[in-house]
Image 1 (cartoon, rainbow over the protein chains, first blue to last red):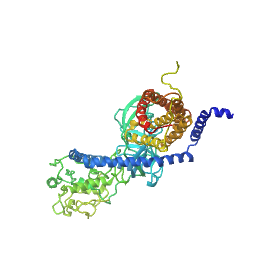
Image 2 (image 1 turned 90 degrees about the horizontal axis):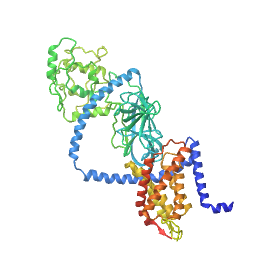
Image 3 (image 1 turned 120 degrees about the vertical axis):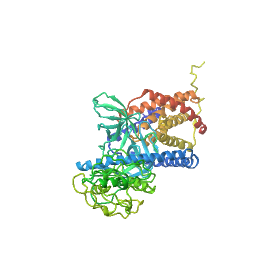
Image 4 (image 1 turned 30 degrees about the vertical axis):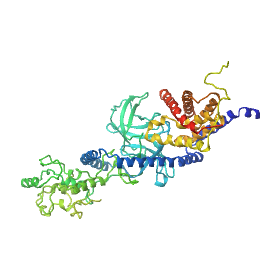
Length: 463
Length: 175
């Protein structure tokens, strides 16, 4: 026996080492949770490797920032101009979307649906990857010390990225959605078909379990369904790239991820999700800046309930469009519904489902994704003030249009949470008597408006 | 007249190289760090397997089977720890490669670029085959063998080995 081992020493060692590793694999297969020994190996390796990776990332970022911020500034003015134009476009779009969102919230409240809001996120830097084609994971520079826990969702402003798999002291391992062991509940935006997203061996994302007799068009957006209890409902996942009939009863839908998974730099870890039932708007409370902005925008009054031709005439003459708006001549238009004033800019400045808004570069950002985000609406209103946009309704010193915006304002007060308006946009009380008695959408007389606000024009309105 | 193939040299002609302790530790660590860092920015870089190339390089240079398999096992286990899968998949694959490369290094001269390309490309295939078999049969991982991709990766790793080995040759010390 001794001669055997001496003669085949190298082969024996090979068999021994292989046997030990296979035994270790078998033990890991049997145990569903990670054993102490493997956890320790990972801990050591990650603790040794990630500081080096972090140093590399920091160095490269420093060099890149110096280059981009101080040296390579070609085209910055042009880009700045384009971005400003884009901001303007997005503001207009936001107003439109917030109206839809407000309507959706009212419906959700009506049916008692629960909705999930991302209330807190932690910004993290991607510092490394597994380096393997078989394992699509990345490492981020935030760990248990930053409040990261396993199974937290990881997203970017473009779309979802993955979930936290393992947490170390100062770093975490994130399983990407294109890994073959990943699974995300998903829903097609327009057709509302639900399925499960899974990664493939080559790093593609496939949506499974959609029946083959369904019609799925390429280009359709895919959102999270919330069924996996990790990602909140409505986050963008990607778009349908290709659809093929599968070997079984289901379609093979290839999805192009919205987030660029092959070039991740900064991500957001969702550390807190709140779930609640949306409340119907209450008649009292603070008003959003979006509503103030809506009231300042030129609008055609609702047809008064009583005959007041002269009143209507004076209304069109006293309503002044804000500076910078494209609306120059307030032409008569069909009157909006009674609830429109409060919902024109949304009961809450809630971005439409699937829109993400990042909190910038701060380490911890509080934000709402697919949920009400008051600050955006407030910012919109405040910015408008700051740019010197004139209020559509003249300040209180002027004679207000009798019944002009009164119907809309009072109606808004009845349906929106509150009235905290700048004094400049408040009609004078003397016109109250001349106003036709407004009726809101539910056929009830509106409640009296809240007292005039103490907030000066241009100051930020907080909830 | 000898019946030896042209690529094969006699055992006495093959030089056994040694490496300093710093190079022995730092080169594998650097390979692992680069392998983990670069794919974050360039995902396609993951087609290269720098730890495998380093394993092959050390194995054929040292020409010791035990050293080769232990080097492969350690590098493979560290690489496993960076993935989310069970620890031992890369360990087993690189142990086999380390043993095989050192066994081959004893018998043939692997100093010229052409041999390095073939040897590294071949061991890449062996590595992938062992990984595939272990993952599928022991862990039950659903995987598919992609011939075109694997052959392309083997070729690219072979080309990368020519460059990398030329750099790493500077750290070799003859005995």
